[in-house]
Image (cartoon, rainbow, N blue to C red):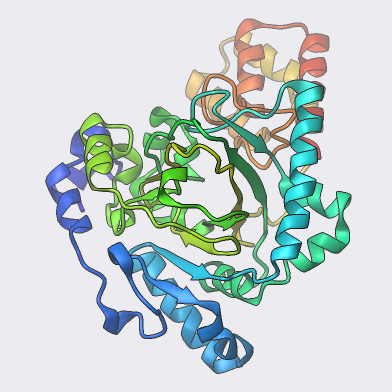
Length: 393
């Protein structure tokens, strides 16, 4: 929602963000005509009961109709939906919770626990890659846990078939503080400067590549701080430039809504939706949610490239070209872009956590730092190998 004059550059920046336009967008109301299969829409959030949609999930054409409804909600509607009883096997949830608690205790003993995003350090417990860790620790539980037809259908509704499932456990204990309002992966995990370097049409693409979700592992009353949500906020196109602005965050805090969830419920939302985990002001609820971050199969290059070996091969010739002033800095950046991995993800966040930001240092940054500082090749090769090792599963 930007005027043509504002969009002449083809890029978004905070100066073009208009709180009035944003407020107009999020003041919409969910029309029940658009959500015929939902049981209700409290605070504009469509809510579906598994018992009411089970038969549709089992029929090919009816399943498509339901998935099309969900896709419209995520893209053009409230941007968020809830499926009550999405995982009805509470024993599987309890078994998974037991495994996750063991992992949390073990990781605390080993390294003090995982880093987190958008929250004060120490206010919660995080398990990175809870998907693989549960699968390897308790494969039978994993099978029961991820056998949900509803969860599979909503992932396919947004991303199509062959989606890539990942998950991270977030445990917020009584007294745990709220997160700051934000948008999520991809551009939400970048600094403001990096986000602004991507053209506007990529800001439109980013939310189509990922689906955010969460499975409640316990009953979550409002005082336990379930996710704060601002329906329709994904519609604001410059939102990745806006979410850090004080007037936007203040508006979010004043107008957000929250829904209580029961064990086995699942919530899914467009990653461009303004959202934040709430404060756990309860005295006894340990709010454990398995956060699902599901990615499109299309987020992959066509060929497998050994960029570590390319960086090794090019380092000394590139240093020589830079020292002899054969290359401008723009040309140097072009060579580095063709050579090294420029994105922080996917990575192993246990070993390669974000440092001074939301994303780990990239291979491109490492290569350029060493070129500019003229590090000895042996030093660069060692750090390159260490970085590569940290990123591996």
